[in-house]
Length: 177
Image (tube, rainbow, N blue to C red; front, side, top):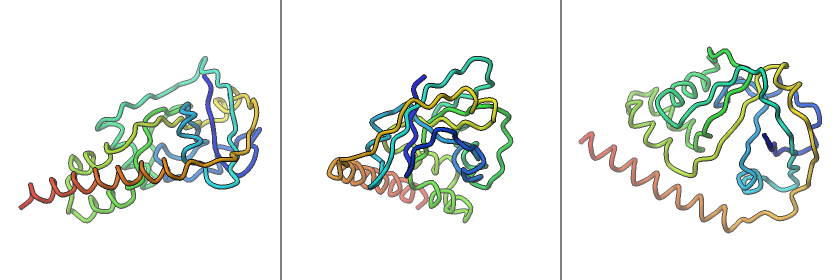
């Protein structure tokens, strides 16, 4: 499987301990098979690292964009990863996850309403490498500096997301009244 990681430097030997413990799928080295996503969200002076990944013999947990996925992300955002796996694969939660989970904690949103908000936007895949065993099966191929960012496309996608998010939030608020 080809995977990509965007960062500030070339990363030939990933370190799973450098990632945040409260990321979507817990601490690990995050990649994506979605090359378009990799370039779309790269910042200035970014480097895209390309890898080949051999899944043989690894314990891999795959999530669909559903309640189990939501619950797993919800607990991981509180640094409570309880899943045993070498690799976790599933959708990326949209950028409102911190706000949405905060609203749940305040009691204003029910989890099912929060999930509606998190389902908005494109469905990109993330792969979290969580063990040294899995890192050993990740082979660096090359790195490429990002030279052109499509700011118009990125802005249009963000505006469409913001509009859809506002509409769903209005529906949720109207249902509460």
